[in-house]
Amino acid sequence: MKNEAIAASGIYYYDEENITDSRLGFRTAVAGPESYEQNDLKGCQLTWGMGYDDPCVNELGSVATRQDRCIAFPNAYQHRVSPFELVDKSKPGHRKIVALFLVDPAVRRPSTTTVPPQQADWRASGISANPVLKSAFSKLSPEIIDHIDSMAEGTMKREEAEAYRLELMDERTAFVSKNDEHFFMAPFSLCEH
Image (tube, rainbow, N blue to C red; front, side, top):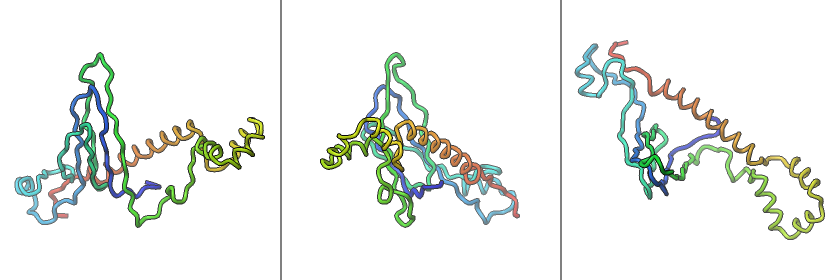
């Protein structure tokens, strides 16, 4: 993806209530075996667990997701959350997580090192925390402050950030779909060529 170089991910499940058990499953794409006898379906199944036209995927297993558990994994693994639902459908329920991404330090990417805070309200609170700026801004009318805010580059309001988030989610969904098609759906073929 355009601005990603994620090497590993971590998910901390810090709270849950009234939901059924769920698991986080992992798989990775593999190259098809190279040395086998043509049409040796049984041998390939026994040796590599792959049959004719099976996807070249290694299912790695899954781990239970539960409160106070942290699961970390390399980004070479594709992960999937198994479905879960409310235990008691007459009551609300939730699962709360914090997702952390370890970025490859060898690949330069935009980060908080080079990009200032983008939330407009953070800038406003920063002005309030600085006595000199606070004094200067207190002499301006709200209309002028709004005009200054509208001209400040590199900031966005919450609505803009949420729209950008949706765009990012669409980009990620398209990437996962294309990644599945190219790496996880490649068929294992028993032909020699």
